[in-house]
Length: 127
Ligand SMILES: [Zn+2]
Image (cartoon, rainbow, N blue to C red; front, side, top):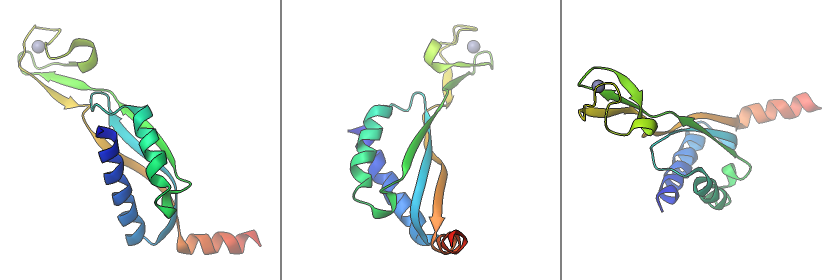
């Protein structure tokens, strides 16, 4: 399963990130996922819910997924067009000399985290 592999990689990255930055708990993770990356959000969330239970810092982390629209560039006429609507053939000139500009990525856009020090501060503030 494609999504499973990505989630394993993601949780590993987050574990390392947390360790380097002395983070005790991750509140939320925002991913930017390309429209034609082949990642199915539902499967991804299922895999995420399964794996985060194995990682204490991720236990309460919320996963947010943002979709990046796919764009293809045509070398024939130099224009960009929507990949999903038109596929590999340019709608402007009919050329097949096209390539994907974006839409195939899966990147961590944002991590909301609590560091050990800020947690202390918020405890003090609370009292
Ligand atoms: Zn074209």
